[in-house]
Image (cartoon, rainbow, N blue to C red; front, side, top):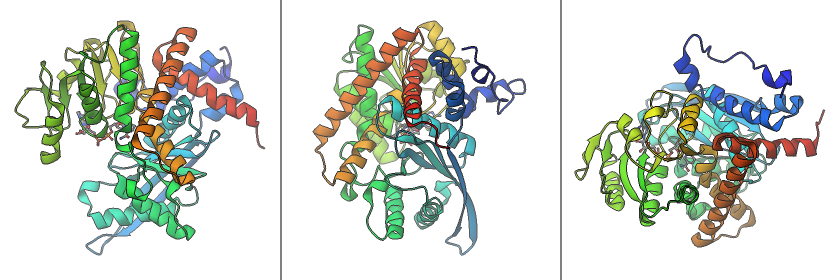
Length: 436
Ligand code: NAD
């Protein structure tokens, strides 16, 4: 613990004295703060510490395309392979104006720890293209996807780097990546991406996997606190893939969904929403706003509403040191990646809130992506019941491993999950030795 390599941190990426709020929100710093804590507890060898603090590979590519207008535009694309010691890199690709290399690095590191935590044989990666998909036609999006894929094609492959959907990308985009890669390889390679349409090698249960995983770990956490899913009052921020599926499955298990929100609105109904009716509303109107059977609340009120479980399933940095003191939930299940800042962690710990950290809570998605990759490589497909049963087994086992580490190391659940994950990655490095 007294090792200088562990205790001396490199200069912060954003100086806290200049802007503490921004420092709290820097995703790479937030990840590193938790990693450092775990490394100290594990008394990680200083050399290994240095290796694990740095991404293995960072690729920046220009993505030139001809727009529908005939004009040439050049976009910037990133792919970061954070660590591949345990297997092929695994991680989503996002299309968004806010994509930065710093964010992609943090998300790639998170993927490394997430895959290790649920003990699937993948490393961690992330990618993105800086663009506004809403301002692009379908044909332009396809050209961006194919050109970006060819730009990073040397790293891609079922044995080296396997992308998946992320913000603003979907199974359509995965199908284009699979096709582009396969055309270059001169044969069909379905296992190069996951989150594909089921008709082309996608897995049954993948669409619901992240929300279903949230349901399993929330059930385990409630049991640990002497409660049950049946009757638990749940608030969900974000009503997209993760949030709506989690709400739906939990309601089917007898939970009461008391509040939901999306970008357009926050809704409160202490008696409980009819979730299939909400899903139908959003399917038809693409937003929650205007839903009649509820009282409108603000985005901030949703986070602090009276409930047993809060599921942030929208975006990063929503639970901060400013609003954490007002949170009433006994359990926070982090469906989104990075919804809680490191500063807020401390507040929640002092309040005794049971946090199911993102790298555990939302790992259902990557777990079924792993099942998809296994099925593609084996050319043998499982029924949905088998997928869900195997997912449950991995989520419950991982929850119990984190709970055991929390008690063993006397740390909060987030640091415990980093300890389990970092220890697994470190063990692989020690066994493999240093190639030089
Ligand atoms: P999505 O685009 O389907 O849904 C996002 C939802 O959040 C939408 O309803 C949107 O309106 C809402 N939203 C955005 N900003 C908001 C705000 N400030 N306040 C309230 N609502 C807001 O995305 P998704 O696939 O459900 O992913 C949600 C989160 O879960 C992301 O952080 C993503 O990285 C993470 N995640 C997703 C998966 C997966 O399998 N989809 C897996 C792991 C992690």
